Image 1 (tube, rainbow, N blue to C red):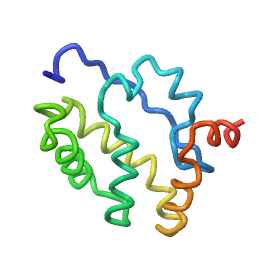
Image 2: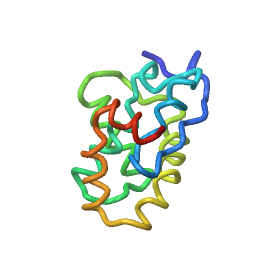
Image 3: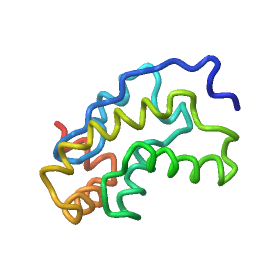
Length: 123
């Protein structure tokens, strides 16, 4: 798969402060959803946080994506705009990491793993 051609940039959904996940409604309204990109950036961001118990740097997150996507054989390269998307994702999460400790963040991630539970809280 060649990520560079035919791929458009898009605005990422905002992070819900209660669930620490993308607002479900916004995610569904995006023209290009992360599922269609095959880059599960929120899923891998959360996996990084659980593994290393910290907010990643841009380079750490991209390397984590690389290991999970390229090294695992899912794709041959990372998406063309992965650096931009990683930067935006970290910037979106930064305030939550500044105002809370890692144990609380992990608890919230676990608590709102189910989509239906997130939808109820967002309403």
